[in-house]
Image (cartoon, one colour):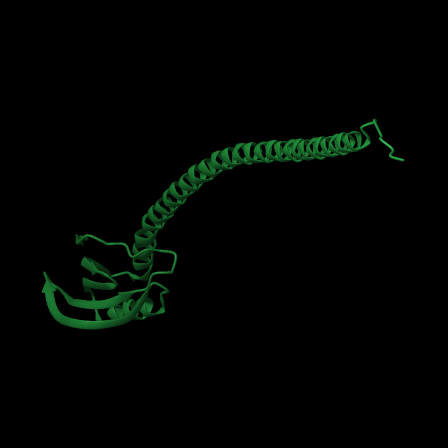
Length: 194
């Protein structure tokens, strides 16, 4: 006997399989969309955090640039002040140097000896003087040699002459001036002492 199934079972199974496949595809698409949204949200959040860090680093960099400008300004001021201090110290040394040397020269001059002129070039000093006798000239040269400011005293010229009834000795000598390391070399002008 022939059995006829009037119920469309195969078609129902096909429809059910198609519905199952469609629902699985929808589920997979939904999960992929959820995963994409999650990773997108995460990337946007990380990007925002990176932007915030960049902004804070730029702000910090601006602060450092301000500090750097202040440091440059302070270094410039420091350099200017050091230059001024050096100039002041040099002027102070130049002010005291010639005074000390002239004071020492005055202390070395014995009685009955007169300086007529002196000429200084660099460390060389030439003196033109008059004394009553050779012993006084020797005392003067010895005093110059013992001084801390003079060295290598050499008598270059001596001549006996008369002023009125008095015999005098005219002489010229040269010596080397010794400057301390802190004192610059002063320049004296030619002068005459009567």
